Length: 358
Image 1 (cartoon, helix red, strand yellow):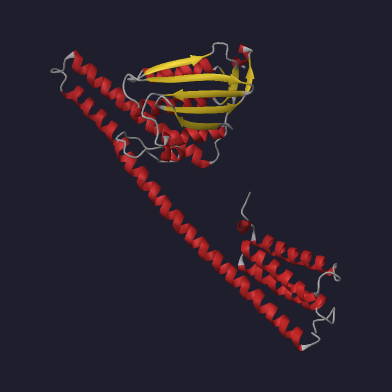
Image 2 (image 1 turned 135 degrees about the vertical axis):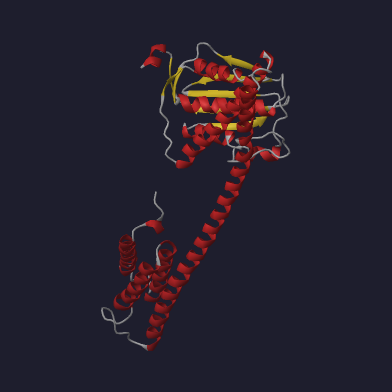
């Protein structure tokens, strides 16, 4: 919904006038309950509320209109702009001045708050930009430098390289390309989330096939951990965005490979509940400090006192895609050591496998 301050100026005038007229009408219908001096306070509050959300000119119009209405309909004698006594004349003048000053001051306060908010947003943008720049300067330059160096060796030292040397250089290129591709994917996915226009494209997914595809993609890059998969072969089809779910699983597994020791086990468990998919990824790493668990899904956040690289986008993308699919993600430390990510996604289910080809 559009903020009130963004409403067109002509509509602000119209709403201000109608609000004052409506409140005045209610007060006019209750003469036995609301004394005319009390009406002044009610109208003043009305103008103050209008001043909180609208620009200065519509508010000034509301202040002038409310003063004229109070004079014409409520101050004796009624239905004339003439004021019967000096006390009421002073009250009218005071009301008018207070309404005008209140409108101006409220508007000025809003302007100051707006400037302060814009300054804070600029400072935050600069901080995020610096964080991203520092991360990318390492996370993109390192694999690019590796690819260039390995390629240069392959091109200039052809006669002196043994088959083992060539294999090692090609492996270095493959690893660096994999790392580079991962960072580019994260940046593209984050830009999709930041745009606010991301819409899931749901279709029937075989979760067994999807998980094994992601694991195969990971194993092709020679991860040093063991990957354990536990999925019921009779799992139903789920109607989900396959691309988003694949990225969720992939990022969770990549995160686990970064922060767990070589030779440890990373487990992927998938369970089906009524109209709900539950995905659990567990590892045997050090887990997360309790005071940092609430921040790990924040954009650009990286754990303190860790030497591992990364832009801090992987888990924030997991959270963004999970929420885009209408689900939730929970992080907890295992009692035996390591971390456990639990993703729950609402989805239609079907045991009719031929639906997958619709």
